[in-house]
Image (cartoon, rainbow, N blue to C red):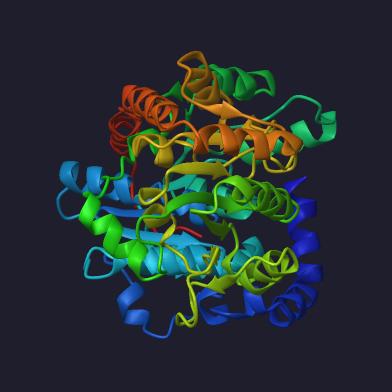
Length: 430
């Protein structure tokens, strides 16, 4: 199967280049994606404790910062080569690498093309390769194995139910060259085992996102932040990481909320910031005053701020009196990071689709620390929270307690990485 995969890649490579160059999301950073960096001397790393960490996009890139910090403490002198596929992920990697001599940011090799993979490996010379959550590439994994480079999939998760047998077989093939799979939960470990991953490769450490505990702002700082929108002494709903189809339901619910509660405003944060104009148009259709965060303020205070910038969602969680979690009203997504607002003691409203965060939702539900609502119940859920400050505070406090109880995944993961590195050998094979 792998031979067929490579034959197809070679035959289709001209089409891969053509499609990539026609796609503005892939065209940006194309030289990097091909292993031709503008400053190659910055990328070429001497043989040593070189660690390659890969995350597909923003949600997974957030895991790298605590991992790098913990590995740096245990492995003084280590160098970290970090990659991602998306533009938004690349911006976040630049933020992580800023001012850090031991961290390099790059786009991931284009389409797993074997000659591109070879360029990356020859430049980076990794001692270990670490992918996050669900990323596996056949050529990269095979070449790592041939070079004696250890590879781990960390914060790993898999959904095997209702998937056809051929897809599970393909997944097993993609995972076979990982030396260790560090799972978010026992449920995920069991799912990996069911598709044929050997139990001895599996370890459960928890979700690294549980360890990312943002700090709340003191009230004056929050008020200063709100004042730039004319929101002083206003109540804020922050809708985080939303997707198409969800914004309409949220905006309709918010419009109904304001009938009796005009002091409430909305920070609406699409998962993909480039959709900002599209989302603002939805708000304006409902006669809500809206502005993009990327534009200068003008006129009266907006009812809705559409957050079209990367890296500021946490700030809007910090000023929130209530949070609506995006991805939970879309069956194809299944939710995003619920622990960020939970750590900040915010009452979070979620929809019915929580497959991606099921374990955290279960714990929050059992503690009475989350509000659940179908799309047509969202207005009522918002109104109930708006009129009951005591309930908002209690739900938020319980959520923070649950979030804090889940810590420890990063330390466990780092122990697993270092254990694998003990048997790693650098090399310069094919």
